[in-house]
Each structure stands twice: as C-alpha cells, then as structure tokens.
Length: 609
Image (cartoon, rainbow, N blue to C red):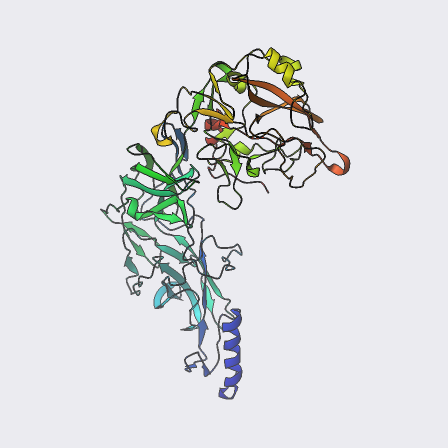
C-alpha cells in the first residue's frame, strides 16, 4: 500500500492514464485524485470512455408484452412523365456524422468500430447503483461530454451502471431514489446499461467502455435525387401522419412506460438537412417510444435541380405523393425513402419495346454516385463515356470472368441494364444483313466496318427515324415532358448522337488513350449485352449497334466486334476481353421489381474496385 510519500508516483500513474487511456481505476490509501484530494483506501476512481452509438438492436425491457416487429421492407417504382421515384420502407437509415467525435478510431466494447461516434459536445450522464446484498441503491450520477471525462471517485464494491443521453447538448437530470425519469418527446434518447452483469469497482477495474443503443424508434424520411444525378436547389416537402410519444424510464430496470399522448413533429423542407453535405440527399428524423403503426404520407412538389451545365431544371407543379405504413419498434431504425430518378423514354413495339435512358451512360470519378446519364444528351467525345464490353470503368478492358453491366450501377441499383439485341429491333434497319451473316460483319482497326458499303446497299432506312448529319432520333411514345425542354429537345427525343467509337488490340488492364479517328461525328455505336458465341470456356464476338446517316437516311446495323474475345483461364490466369470502346445507352430492366423485392436489396449500388 502506498503512503503519502509516494504521491509523486501516484501522479505519474494518473498522468500516464490520461495520456494513454489504459488505466481505469486507482485505489490507494491517502492517494490524491486529479483535484488534489486524497482518495481513501476503501474507494477507487472509475474512468469512462464512450465508444459510440451502435446500429444494432437494443434490448430495453418493455412495460407491455408487445410482440411488435420491425416494419416489413417494401419497395416499388412509381413512374410518371416528369420524374420517377423508388419508394421504400426499410431499416437502412444512413448516418450523418457531420458533428462526429473526432476520434475516428474509437471502438465499441465488442471490439468492432462503433457505427456512429458521439458528438464531442454531446452530454451524457452515468448513473451508479451499488449492489447491497441484491438490493441496488442509487449512489451517484455524473454528467460528461465525450473525451473530457474526469475519474469518478466511488466506494469499492459491485455496481450496476446506466448511461443516458439525448444525443444533443441538453443537460440530463440527476437520479433519485425513485429511479424513474420522464424522458423528453421527439429526442434521440440513447441508453446503455451493465444489465444483469455488475461491474466491480476496485483497483483492478478495467476501463468502462460504453456503447449506446437508441431507446426510442428512429424514423428517417429521406428524399433524394441520386437517380437524377443532380443536387436539389429547392423543393416543397410535406410529411403527414407522424406521431412522437415520450416515455418514462425506470433507470434501475430499464422498463419503459409510454405516454398516453404525443405530438406531431414538424416535417417540411425546412426540417430536412443535407446528408453528409450532399445536396442530392435530404433527410429528417423523428423519434417515438410508441410502437403503434403510423400511416405516413410524403409529398414532393416544385422540385428544382441543378444540371451539369449549371442551368436549373424545374418540374413545376409536378407532384409526387406516396403513402406507407411504418410500425415503429423501440431501438430500431426505420426509413421512408423517396428516391427520385430520371424518367425514361418509351419507344418500340413487340420484343423491341424498351424504356430508354434519355442520354448515354458516363462515369464521374469521385462522385458518391459516379454512374449517371448526361442531363442534356450532348454530342461528346468525353473519354468517360467510352467503355469496353463488360467493363465498369471507361477506357479499361474488362476481365472475362468478372464482366459487369455498368448500367446496373446507376442509382437505384439494377433499375437499368445494357439492352439486348432484341431491344434494338425498332432502332435498326429492317433489311440489313440479318442473322449470322449480319452478326459476323467484321470491324477493322481503322474504326469503320469493312462491310458498311454492303450493309448500306442492302439496308433500308430505319423506320420512324429522323436523320441529321450528326445524330439520328425517334419520337418516343411516352416520356416527353416540358421539364426537359421543348418537345423536340435532345432529351425529349430518343436521340443517338454520332459520338464515334474506337478499336483497340492487346491493351491489358491499362487506361486506354481514346482515339476516335474519323468516326466522331459520323457514327453512333453502343453495346448490347450479348456475345455472338458464348460458352463456359470462350466468349467470342460482341453484338453492338452501329448507325450513321447516308443519303439523308438513318441506317443502323446489328453487328459484331469479332475482335472482342475473352478466354477464361488464359496465360497466367489472365482473362481479358479485347474490345473496342463505344458508348452505352441503357434501358430499364424489367426484372428490377423481382430483384428489389429480395430482403437483401439496397438501392445504393455496390461499386466494384
């Protein structure tokens, strides 16, 4: 046991603790704490550290025997001429760490990285209940902010602990003998406890690491324009049907008693904030202790977005109102998602009927949603819009055993796909070299098909097409909307610009320098999703669309790059598709409804490396 002559060593020990955060308790006869006061031999100093807020489920006891379950996930696509939207109810609430505690390396008591750090100015209170022969007696409570906790001096013994926060800077009431605390309404109440396992406080006590769970249900309303590839300049957002009830908690047992009535949290556009600084994602939250189903309605009108040419697109009075039921479960996250996406242009009939994107696919490096469509469908030789077959990155050859449909990476995941050869039927000349002979049209390294002259002689004009020197276009049967400009604008017509294409040979896994030769301004070329010959061993030839204006008419051919070959398990295990570079024009995937119905579906795409 130390004496007062060892005070210097004690101070060094405490200093080491403060610097390294490894010592949790000191217990010494007549030792001095941080305030210079002596610590009696029957007492110790407990130190607390906050690990963060868990995204897991809380296990708070309930006053009732309710068997409520989390709202079932549901998602649907709502279509209109102006804009479409995916509307979902799920538990995938994104976190917004704008005010996160700066210690990014904080870890939860499980050893895993905490899902959400607690803000550095957030207040929380620790309550201690001493176990006296099975009876717990309130001993003391102390309020802290993360990172500035001073040691707590308490008598040695066995304790139950409880931590509480409102996830803001509000003070937390002290405890009393009743153990009951009336919680606030519509606050993000955080709760943690030692539960049935007491902590023994003495000189050997380990650090007390606290990971909070949410006590109330957290309901997020998210409105985003990720599928329109543009930030929201302004919008009118109204939410109705929401209800927030408070509760009283017994700190010692964790039991909750829900208030008989609650309030209606205001949820209009002024209550929505940018998620992680992204103006294309707006989010608002409310919190309730009640577990009664709520019928929510979310309405979006007067939407205005910022385009990539710095102009604004206004959807005027176009309105979207959606209703969904959510059954809150305490301790869980719930999300009502309205993900606004660009509407499609419908054209064709029979097997060629398709809903086309208004412009070509391109890749924007560094963006949260890098796969997108041009807002104005320009004629462009942008290198980020030229892809090899099966590649998810522009100007990079794909691996034959890891080909990716880049269209499926547009938000929301899997809604778009690369068109099949059949879906090109209504934008292809009906009398071109058909069948296998047409598919075998060879592509030479100069960038012009060797059989173009033959194709032109045999092919008829593409029906319903309008040709110019630099593009061809079709009038869609649905999708025309004044928000996208005049009826004849480049995005209200199904326009295929003559952006050209490029052949390449033998370039493996390197970024290819784009060289369109004499094809830019003369040809359009875009991929289908099909091989000419496919097997588990070899994929030979890739079907694509090649079109141009000749003698005032638009002619287009289903053709094949015979140079596009991928041999699986090649030399050294290398399996690269040697492929030309061309545009991708996406169509809606008719199987999206089935894919999105799976419990594992998440609208945010998972981007390959």
